[in-house]
Each structure stands twice: as C-alpha cells, then as structure tokens.
Length: 279
Ligand SMILES: [Zn+2]
Ligand SMILES: [Zn+2]
Image 1 (cartoon, rainbow, N blue to C red):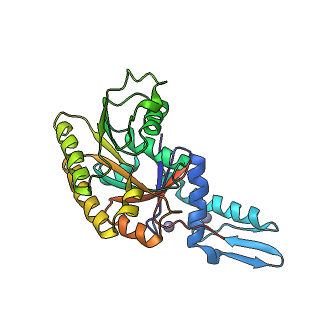
Image 2 (image 1 turned 60 degrees about the vertical axis):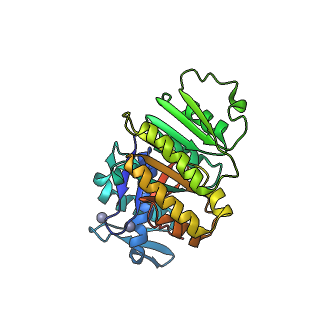
Image 3 (image 1 turned 135 degrees about the vertical axis):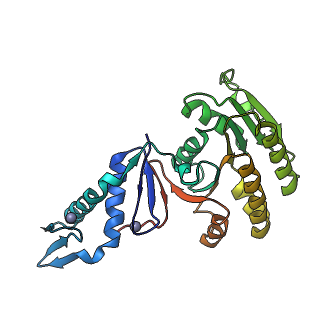
C-alpha cells in the first residue's frame, strides 16, 4: 500500500509505503513553512500552532521541535491518501525522472514501483543481469513479456543460476557504436510490436547518465523529447534516472523539463517538489 501527501502551500508531495515515514517527513516539511512559530525564551524553546490555540515549551530543543512537528501533522493527517501510485499524477502515461544515487536501494525501490504496473516491461540497460535479478526478487510475478535492449555481450550469462522459465524474455543486442537515432528507432520498433496487443508497457531507460556523458545536453534533450512522444503514443509508463552526486544541478534542471514528474528516491520514500527540512 502506497500513501501520498500533498502540501497545500507548495508543490511538495511525498509517497511512502510507511505511514510513519509520511508523518515524520510531513511534520518536518510543514514546520518549514512556520519557522517563525518557534522561538527561544529563557533557555527554553517555545512553539505556538498557527492553526489552533496549542503551544508548548521545552528545555530540550529536539524534543520541542519533534512535538511541534507531530502536532502540525495532526492537522493534515486526514488528507493522507492511500492506495495510490506515483504515476497517478499523470494518469500512468508519461515519464518520470528519478533522482537517486547509482546502485542505491532508493533507485531499486523506484524501479520496482514503476515497473510493477507493466504487463510488458522494456529495459534499455547496460546491466541486464541486475535488472533480471531485481524483477525475479522484487516483483510478485514476472511480467507477461520482458524485453531487454542492451549493448552487453552475453547478457544472460550472469543469471544462469536463475530459473527464468516463468519469464517470457527477449534480448535485443544493440551495437555500442550506434548513434542515438538508431537506438531510438530500435526502441520505437519494439514498442510498435507491443502497443496494440493490449497490456501496459512499462519502460526503464537506464542509460541516461551514459548519454549525458557521451553527447551534448541539447542532443540528449531532443532525443528524450522524441522518445517521450513515442512512449506517450503507446500509453507507456517510462522512468529514467540521474545520480545527483555525479550530475550538476543545472544539467538535472534541464533534463527535468522533458518529464511529467521528477522525484527524489530513497529506500523509504519518494519526494517531489522542494524538500524543506529544519537545520
Ligand atoms: Zn509545503
Ligand atoms: Zn494546532
């Protein structure tokens, strides 16, 4: 079960499978809107609620802040929704940029979330074995069809220990010397094979960091735009990722504009919009 909270005062949105995680993060976020309500007086910290008569005084700063955050959350707790998917924000047809460190649990968490609505799953990846293992481990059942586009030689060599008989797997080898337009054409051809047979297409485009490294930003941007239009025409849900430790903020800001949504992912939650924390 995934819960969602949207701030009424700003574009901050958080999703998590844990209500406690939502409560903690939302309290902290909302306090960010009411910092002036926390003051220091006679070695004590004092807070007063902007919405009701409640106030508090504490000698311990952290305890005071935590109490105020919990109180602020109580005012909005009833607006936490449940049983949602992040892609509900755009009716499940569109693209999401996931900001998370490469190899992190947060990124895998996002992968599972965005692949799970897919009947037909398409990977464009340089790490086919890791993606296959993730599907095998984390999805309740194999998608009806899984297609892996990769430049990696012998893509299934590293998963020979797995029983893949449940998965209907197709591997398409890409020549690493191919240009972006050939990669796009290959994706488009595969999407064309499946878009009319029924079932949701979920695509994971894993090689955005490689593209940003290899091509200039304008070229990548144009490519992503054409790809997004193609995926939209097939009602596909696609996701991409960047590593905020490896990519500059300005590059991420440019890339953000191609997508329907941009989120930050860790192992417990996804956040869109400003991430406001005290301190
Ligand atoms: Zn807010
Ligand atoms: Zn109050």
